[in-house]
Amino acid sequence: MTDSAPRPAATYLDAASGEPLHPAAREVVLAALERGYADPRRLHGPARDARLLLDNARAVVAECLGVRADEVSFTASGTDAVHRGLLGLLRARARSGDRVVLPRVEHSSVLHALEWAGASAETLEVDRLGRADPAALAAAASAPGTALVALQSANHEVGTRQPVAGLVAALRAGGSDVPVFVDARASAGREDLPPGWAVAAASAHLWGGPAGVGVLLVRHGTGWVSPFPADDRVDERTSGFENVPAALAAAAALRAVVAERVEVDARQRRLVDRIRAAAAAVPDTEVVGDPEDRLAHL
Image 1 (cartoon, rainbow, N blue to C red):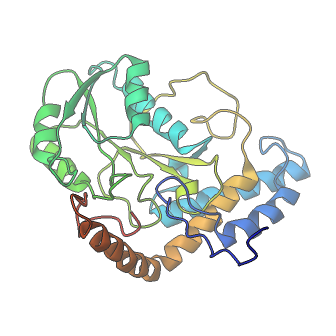
Image 2 (cartoon, rainbow, N blue to C red):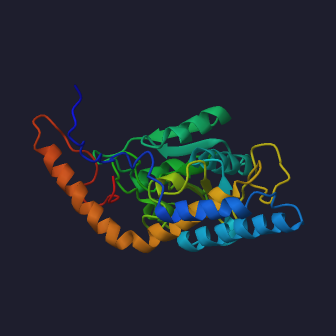
Image 3 (tube, rainbow, N blue to C red):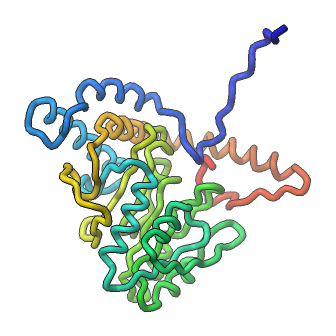
């Protein structure tokens, strides 16, 4: 015999790994598939349609993230954006050295990129909330041979915001021009990017866009050299045929999330506070992360 009672609706609690596709993205991607299939480098009509869609996606993402359109590149994933961002900075800073300063809580994609490049990583501890010390990072970055500092905007697992602005201020106060790479995948779209970064990375599937779309941000005037073989594409910072429909869907989802985020942030913060309180009531359980200065959804 089978149980005929209806099953309760499932509650999805893995937003740290990926968000369900936002309705705005679903609507756009279907329409874009009809017009965004051609090579945006070509000059015929369908190609010009694809180029128009790609440029529009870049402009929307730039507006939502508070950057210039020419600072936005679409990559194959958020991990790809991290790798390109870090390795491109390292290559541009080769004369300064290959030493990278970072806290112990950086995402594994950051560590894998540095290991692959053979860079020298100076890893610093964080406090019990998972937060790095900006003064300690800046002091470590003052050592000769430092190419860059890597600091996430917020922790991917516990949501603790990181002091990116404080780090940049400490670096500049000490007369250092060492650039800062920011992994903003956990926070992009949900709140403004922190100031002062040179290169940043984001991932569309973490704001309700389609998987397979990363965003690489390179500030105008920042020294960055592609670490991978060149490819004759629209954007010299990337390689491979652009997924125009997915980029447009990612932009649509980002615009919707930014428009909704004040209301959604308040609702999610209340829900997470309830989860934290319930977890804290379980014997022998420690609730980690900053209880206040954190992302609302983690």
